[in-house]
Image 1 (cartoon, rainbow, N blue to C red):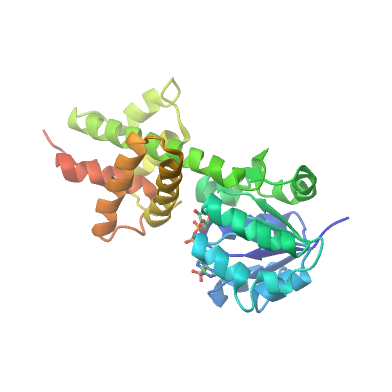
Image 2: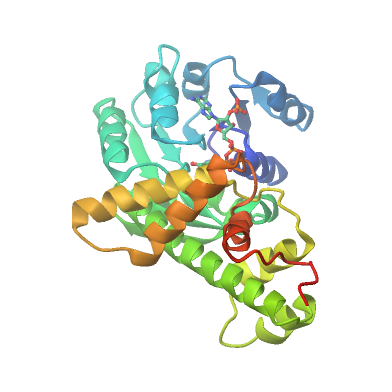
Amino acid sequence: MSEKIGFIGLGIMGHGMAHNLLKKGHDLTVWNRTESKVDEFVAAGAKKAQTCKEVAENCDIIMICVSDSPDVKEVVYGEVGVLAGLTEGKLVIDHSTISPHTTLELAKSVNEKGAFWLDAPISGGNEGAANGTLSIMIGGEKEQFNRALPYLEAMGKGITLVGDQGAGQLVKLVNQILVVVTGLAVSEAMVFAQAGGLDLEKTLKAVEGGAAASWMLSARGPQMIERDWRPGFTIDLQQKDLRLVLEAADQLGVPLIATSMVFNMYRTLQQQGLGGEGNHALVKSLENMSKITLGEDHK
Ligand code: NA7
């Protein structure tokens, strides 16, 4: 049986995800805090809800993709939030990246209503969201995972049940360690290549197929070279994720040397007012230190 889907949060990621649900012909109701973002979805066949409560009342599966832990809490616990409209048997899927601790608290509240919760954070940037090729890492019950799968398949390719509630968020933090440390390696390599007077495009082409291959290198390397800082994922949100990583690492007592360094590098960029730029603008932090700028002749 086809279920009615609700989508809350039509930002950079939610935009592509909700469009892909519509493209696959799913029955979709949308809500966004900034109301104007809803119009294009209504034009494409979605229904518009006035509140998150209304989304929960009218849908069987409610997907959320908003910024941070307090935002998901607001959307769920608010006076006209999801919880107020939730009834037995419904399923809430949170695609936002938030604290694993907050996730367990939210899941408990939803479960107390006789409803279900999956944490299902995403990776793949705006391209992955637009193309329906996101990686989706899921924590929760197998039965609910199977229930959600046909809808998640409209939005992603690598869809993995990684453990119980909260495990999806923890795996997303693992993902973010890999993303930012790879981002640092790409940044450092590009600055080094620039200092050596190399043709950056040719350099990238020469190394991206070998052992140094990575999504970050191939997707964001060209953007660094072109100095295109438009965000697939903003520095502010990346910084938020690193805060979550470092909080969890502190609780676990595990040292994260490179990750904490990148956290501080991003902070210098936020101080310069660059928090809205893409996370690949990390290279600017190295440019600031070395006085070597990609694309400039330093000879
Ligand atoms: P964006 O493009 O910054 O979009 C954030 C979305 O979250 C956007 O729809 C916001 O609404 C919405 N939002 C943020 N705070 C709230 C509150 N308090 N209440 C309701 N809605 C809110 O982020 P991305 O799409 O790149 O990322 C979303 C998540 O996926 C994030 O956790 C990432 O880490 C992964 P707005 O349009 O601003 O009114």
